[in-house]
Amino acid sequence: MAFLASSHAQPKGATGVIVFADGTVVWGKGFGASGSAVGEVCFNTAMTGYQEVLTDPSYAAQIVTFTFPHIGNVGTNAEDVESRVEGAVGCVVREPVTEHSNFRAERQFVEWMKDLGKIGVSGVDTRALTRRIRLNGAPNAVIAHDPKGRFDIDALLQRAMEWPGLEGMDLAQRVSREHQEGWEGNYWRLGQGYGRSPRDDKRPHVVAIDYGSKDNIFRNLVRAGARVTVVPAKTSFDEVMALKPDGVFLSNGPGDPAATGDYAVPVIKALLEADVPLFGICLGHQMLALAAGAKTMKMHQGHRGANHPVQRVGEAWGDTTGLVEITSMNHGFAVDADTLPEGVEQTHVSLFDGSNCGIAISGKKAFGVQYHPEASPGPQDSFYLFEKFVGMLG
Image 1 (cartoon, one colour):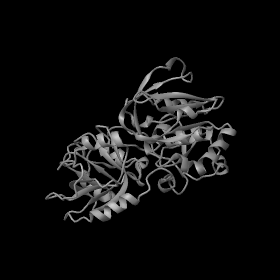
Image 2 (tube, rainbow, N blue to C red):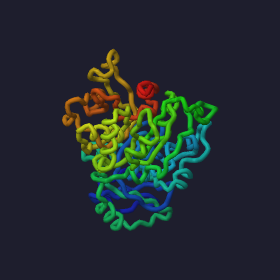
Image 3 (spheres, rainbow, N blue to C red):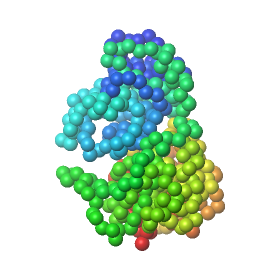
Image 4 (cartoon, rainbow, N blue to C red):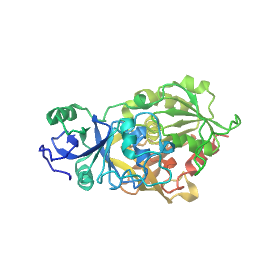
């Protein structure tokens, strides 16, 4: 099977299909769950971590094209799941999924995908699909799998055409937890798993607002010395303050930040006025920027992968300004650096395209980054951010 420029003719043996809103039809071998799902097609350049990617809530309503050809070959395990809520709806891969070969594997990738309700299509020319996204932007499409190869292409096309896309879509409420909870997890050690965080009320208390969070973020806050309470996305300022936080963390998440900002920004503005220390990652970074008076924008293709170089700029990092971090990214929206108001310093920039990757607010203990420091691509280039945040809570 290979990427076809535009063909409705179903090849023999095709059990999977991707139907784009512009009428392009791509055939392949389906795996995982049966059925269909609609979303935005993006690509991720990471060579590892496919399980973390597919369970990251930031990928809600997205179909991930993996540029690395061998996906699924290390299987899956319970420890590498980033969240129990919705993540990516499906994935597109080049090679057929083989038997796993890894000492940590507990299940086959195909079985795991099926149980999570995620649809996969293999046998696609992912290089050609990636080039298409780079040239034309991230398209809307429907991904479908039927073991018997029965598809209503016209109906799938209609569904892809009618889907409104991510702009203007608030997905944070859809993936946020519904109730407050104390985080009891710990950071991972080989052969020991995660364990529980220490029960020490003397640790600085971080209230984390969950816009679609990844568990490993909370583990790193614990590792840096914090006690963490996680609250839903629409928690009010008064409810946050009733928990007596030493600092507030703004999590990653999916969707259009401007839409989520309708209810998130007023809370963050109030936290800034109260001089509560703040740290935001990805969507949380964008929420902080919006609260400070900046604007966000939809990117042409987005940044998704584990090898993105980011440089520290400005004066916020002192002697370390100019250093480059290798980062993990997953975002299709970004803060528009040209709209940063006076008093908001740009602290990090992408060396791929110069887009904003970090801010700090003058006179406040408040900063954010557009990448995922908890994902360990460097592998430890960005851990200092958690230490910096917890260190300012004394």
